[in-house]
Length: 399
Ligand SMILES: *Cc1c(COP(=O)(O)O)cnc(C)c1O
Image (cartoon, rainbow, N blue to C red; front, side, top):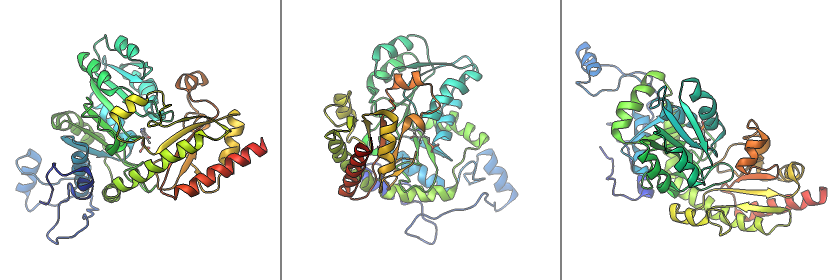
């Protein structure tokens, strides 16, 4: 056992936590690319299945490389336990479906990742689960919705793509009074910029596909929470329904975690500079970035987060046509719906990630036809600035 004490700081835990060396004393984490495990005897197999002996059985239930990742994530998050899943959506699905049953009620903030929105609006009601959406920044709506007993609350802060910041301690206090567990999708903040459990959350979910890999290679997800809930509620669900993470992906993500601090800090610094640059451009009507004084929940962001994140959202004057001219004129920054990559990526939410929701719902979320989401990567910030400058100039000339 070489697992360091939880008292180490996050940057140290990101490199070391959860590491379990084999007899070969390797430096890097071993990749156990195996689906099954063998027993010394029939008796040992029996003892493993009764629970009398601890032994890996099958990689759908647990795998040493995946467990290293789960332990590292749990220690970094300050959570008692973690289960890794194949994707971020598998994590959200498992967190909700393992806990909820027919007759239960879930309250969610409206500004959710597209597939999370679908689970809440379409999937859960099929199973007799009542779901209610609220405007996440309006505490009166939360109060009204949580006046009725509720099993779970789901929210995302900062949200995709408009970077709404929600008051986690106030919402958690109301949710707990209503009997609900609070699930926070913390993808945009990463484990480093916001600590939902300290702010009142019971369960934290991640798409590891984003900053935790951070290099655009693999899909992955994670659910973190109290040991009792993970063991008794989540584990039977994931064991029997099978959203298991591949050991290969877990190995890639362990390596991703080792550089998470460096990558997130660098991208945040660049994002902050680019947000300020964009706000001074004639074609840019508005910029959203949590640490800017003009962000609608600036005070809350400063209280809850230790950095603004790696995403900048801005609105181009002239709607979809002008936004498309800007996207098409970019040379370095590429058009993609992914985010959290070392490569800077830009997307037009109204026609891609948020295309499937109605124009009225998009308007309620503040996603205009001119809105552009920029995921800031690790290039030299001056090259990113120059690329944005030339694309904005080209869009103005072409408009
Ligand atoms: C990407 C994302 C997800 C889904 O993760 P996948 O790994 O793509 O399944 C969920 N929530 C947020 C906020 C995301 O950005």
